[in-house]
Length: 72
Image (spheres, rainbow, N blue to C red):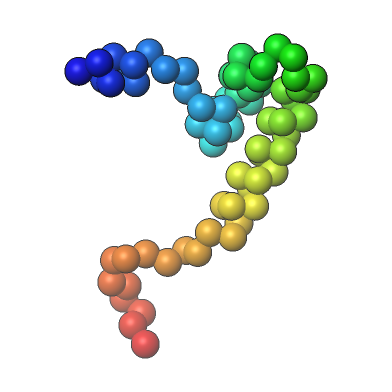
């Protein structure tokens, strides 16, 4: 039960926001997660996350575990 409470109150990951196209929320999340002593530019971090996400989508195989109609 306590784990459920913690999980429901935990903030969303910046990756979640990037994948949903909510870049301003992702920047706020990165800023909040960074330590105050770090000199982090949230916009640069989010830009790198967007680039990584785009590369992952491009390189993701379009295969499926479902049987296709075009069997070899």
